[in-house]
Amino acid sequence: MSQYLNSAMETLAIVGVIETLLLVVGVIYAVFLWARGILPVLYRLGNGLAKRKIAIFAKGDNLSSIKSLLADSKLFRQNIIEVPSKNDLGRAEEASIYLVYWHDWSGEINDILDKKPDRCPMIVYAPYNKGKIPDDQMENLDGKRNTSVTNFRGRLLNDVVTAMITTKL
Image (cartoon, rainbow, N blue to C red; front, top):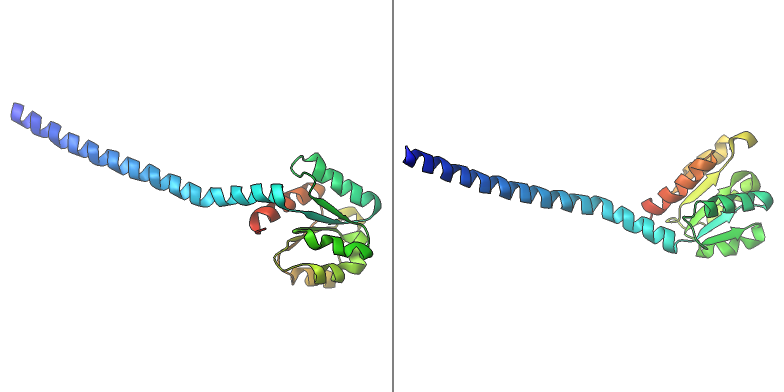
């Protein structure tokens, strides 16, 4: 009987070692998958918040309102470029994200699109209470890469952060 007990103990020891090895390999694989999926996103977000410049195309009170929205989030430092008129379009050359207040720039949207690099995301903010963007212009915006349209202020901030994650500097 002692012989059977020793055999059973040896078998259980071997099974225990195999289970431990499988657990260790599984944990290492899970950490690898997590690092491969999450770390690049965190890296891009950190780089975006630290280095990216946001060009705000808006006029008057709309410009100060959007700038305050971004500043009040405490996510963005002094990386905001103001573009209040068509004569200032050149200021946006340093920017890596364009944020356009539709109702102030609807007439010059083609000038902005011509200036925008393909890799640069553009977020068009068209408040719901001021009227919608005409269908032909929506089609024009849809034809450009990395362009989104939002109607809500809360969504605007979310779109800026998402643009930082999904596009490279």
